[in-house]
Length: 261
Ligand SMILES: [Fe+2]
Ligand SMILES: [Fe+2]
View 1 (cartoon, rainbow, N blue to C red):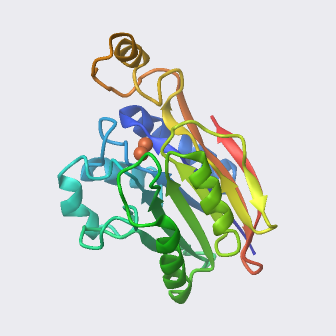
View 2 (view 1 turned 30 degrees about the vertical axis):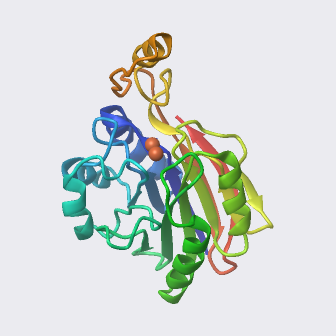
């Protein structure tokens, strides 16, 4: 049996929510997508995720929300995240924090169980438990819980760390996607005939912007060496991500196609 998963790069503010609301459903229908995973750490005003906005993007067709270093920017997230098993925070945050870093999505018609794991990088990022060792433990748990396929969202800054984790996990999971840089890379590949990989999915939000945020504010910051406002860009909306096809019985990724709409 074949299974098709769409993974989307970080949704940036209202623009990210709008572009998903407008473009996701036609894409899912037109491409017969079975499951959608999206990074939601920048959904609310560009930083963090409110419950209202989380409900809105889930209603727009996203099955699992992953996140990253901005997931705690909104204090309310810690209060509601425990009630939504399909909203993940990186697994290598301390276990004492609310929420979980892994989830198994079950496709109702095909019966396929897809484990999703969210990890945070450590290079040019806050100090964190090793994503490599945490991945080993969480992947074992997902297999024990019956995952047919496993998708990892590795939210990290450094390309080297992302490629290293992708190769490290190439005999253990079926897809590793990078997020956090908000710039889509053209290096999608299937490692060792099994594991789909891309360094970064890109963004859902303003295209002619700085990482999805107002360009003029960013340029002013660089010209004046001062902290500037950082508002999500509003123009030239784009939806970026990756379509991945899997052979469920053989547990391997069989094709990848970058998406930019
Ligand atoms: Fe982000
Ligand atoms: Fe991030």
